[in-house]
Image (tube, rainbow, N blue to C red; front, top):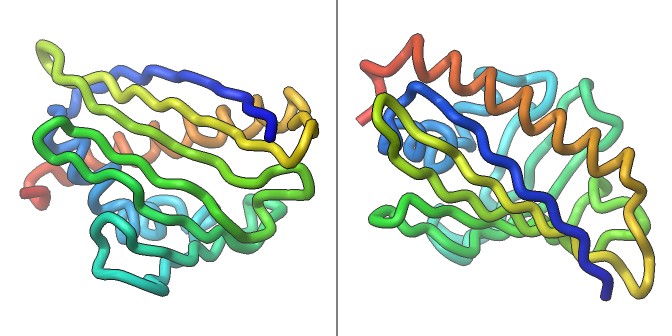
Length: 159
């Protein structure tokens, strides 16, 4: 299995706790509300939302794919860390075995930094084309900015 990796850091004026809650813990409800063109809906297939939960994500018309199956690997509320692995769906294309997304929200003066490490595990010696990685990174950045704007406009609703 081959491995390709990206690391992205995104600063925000949203507090670390509220970003962790809205961007990661509540992603199943926030993303379809804010970005229905990317994420139509999320269905829990196994589990209760905690570690080990398997979800089926139905993708919107802004993507060429229709589904992705995710497994929640880490929820560390004290450390503001969250990891999930995409383990199925047509989003994995022919060359991917899985995609691991590791998030850590780091508090800063006046906000936070969201650190995202994405690990693309390819089948055999396959290599995911750089343009696909760039496209995924750009879509993630746009999604982050849209969710951040939503959170800034709706901070009163977050615990």
